[in-house]
Image (cartoon, rainbow, N blue to C red; front, side, top):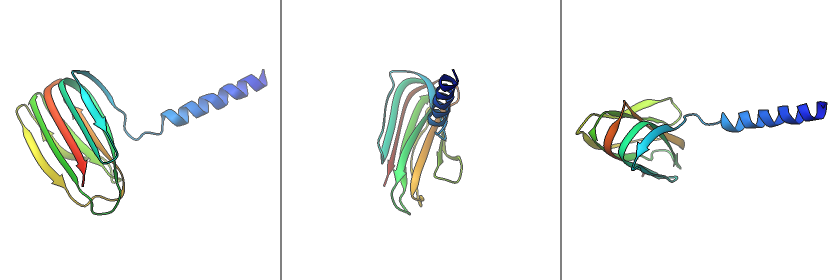
Length: 131
């Protein structure tokens, strides 16, 4: 019985370690939603989206930049990034907004890009590229 409890406790500890390792979590409800996340680029395109989507990009050397484009037909959303200094706003979109810009001077390592919808958004398109 002690052996079974030890194995169970070890299994629960491993499960906790594997599930609790991510810095940010994705959770959403979407319709006609397409997304991709590669090491140096990510995108999401949707008809309806509610919640948040987290992308992980890799900055391989100091000084690289994050190029991004975003547009949203209805609703509002905020895009944040974190490359080791905490969650910082990248851009905010409201109904009918469209933006295109570049964030310069990234540090090497993981760059988290978080898209957070404020309620339900419609007809959105977001693209992120490490250059």
